[in-house]
Image 1 (cartoon, rainbow, N blue to C red):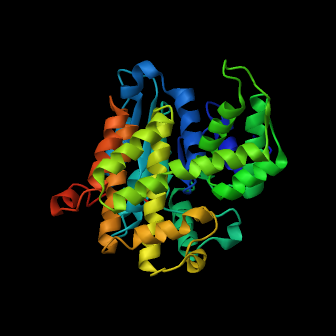
Image 2: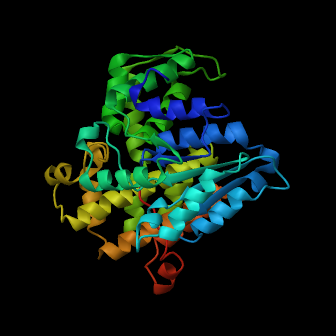
Length: 385
């Protein structure tokens, strides 16, 4: 995939791992979850032995863990694992409420003499990097520059920008070719257009298309994905996307919500990547509803003016999502949902014994009337994709 411009930063980062070019820390900048997961998986494959995962992999959040604790963990060798990987979410907490002179001084002191057996990865998914950098939001530019000025001397900067439609098409065709299947160009275009170049959804639909055209015995089958195949699968996908689930959630229909979640889980492998993908799409949809509510959008014609390219839903979902957003009484209801999703995200990444149970509890909470006690547990969390 190295020929894909949108993948270049992630591929350079992966190529540097376990080489002399590797740095003791990196900042993963951007909210393109597909590329983030690509980087994360590469790190896990390189440094995390499944047998010692609990001792060498740490997912921390600056909302409830101080940077001093993070650095102390990185500096302290593990007795149970030869190498430590530390993902640090909620980086934006370093840039709020005061100058944080002591925090940045501690960071500088650590990186002057870092532990060579540890890798720190700061996750800055509160920044959106568009495909065309010239269209980057001014606030995101300011956030990016501040991170670069404070961490750039110590950490590698990995820009996870939104994937362009052209690269999304190339990725889909290359993915098919790797399975000895030809994805016809007009079929690739229809697929990307229907999904808005949303890579998490594109990956999921490509898996289904490849299965659809394969033989029942697992053989390559006809080895070709046509426009007709995509139209058939996309139409079916419209009925099983998370938009139906968020519709049931917004109506506080707990039974229907659980039934729809069950269908989504049964259609996927149920593994960590699938669970994270569902959470990502839930968070994305609730963020879209939050903007729709804040901007008082009432029809689909206005929706394209408030949602930027790369953050839009497929056209078929626009009217439904407006209706869903207007069922919420206030911004607080929707930010509550995002906090609940953040909590589930932390649990899933902690490798729980039952990921399905985590998602089921989340859906039940989302479909329940909000209570004051629900917010108390998550009032320090932030989940912006």
